[in-house]
Image (cartoon, rainbow, N blue to C red; front, side, top):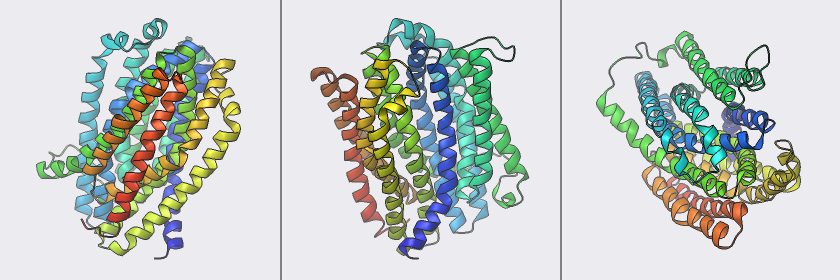
Length: 443
């Protein structure tokens, strides 16, 4: 297949995945905008709690990426039995992992005061923190089911179910945060309950659809509670665990950045949250493209069509780079306007706009590195990328962030420049490895 044909095929699969990722990102954007109108302290609490939540959450997401790999391999080989096993094992692992992570991080609540955050932020955090930690289990369960559906080239039903969850979350935010329709005005805690409720109902919706789908009937487990096959689980974790380490290293770096910035006060924390929301929302596009590339690479490898791997990679990188240019120009030219839509504090808006300049600078490397790492995952190459992630973010990115923010007094902006350096190193090494692997790939 030609470059243009591969690009069209990638875009066809990526489009609903991108829309789905953006819709999920709107959950965080909705919380940020709606709580930002309540106050700076509430926004700082949201940032602090989410920085702790996303660390174990992304670890779980990383483990579950193995579903996309094994389901796409099974589809390429036309092996429905292997596809059912991938879905069942993934859902079982998501359930157990979600429960364990929720329990573990809920137990850390008494330690919130040791993260060097402002006293007023720490005082308001525990209840909201506990609620969103409980929501981790249904969130991971729904992602497991969605990964299977996406790998089966059935992304649209999952998209509509997840979008329904977003709409419900925004509605419940409006009711519970502000006390509308006769409900008590719960503020911060209301946002937490809205998120938990929507995530539970998304799982219910996904299970109902998959169990009734005629198209996927052969590829969906008949017995969800069947005892797992030990060798299959071992293979699953062999791909998922290194992937989770790689993803966790990156997210942990951003969580660490939030803790570094928290030392500079509520306003800096609020500006960081605004910039992070903008960056993360833009990132959903290359993330959706990367998810499509992982599926396409895995399916081609499953069929033994190794000559298609490099054209798929080149087309994917081209699409990701095009989006990176668009988003970079947007952040350069409209940073202040974007920041002002979240908060009306002049200092917060000004600082967020400065950070968004840095965000614009690293759009290209961020887009290319996520595409590269996802393609490597589709080729079952996860251990070396995990090491690359650790070295890039924790041996270079965070130390440079500390130096720039504290010793050179660049404060919040310096932290973000450190993150940009880590992303650049990760991009260069992962893209080089992908280029080599797509020339000589074999599973």
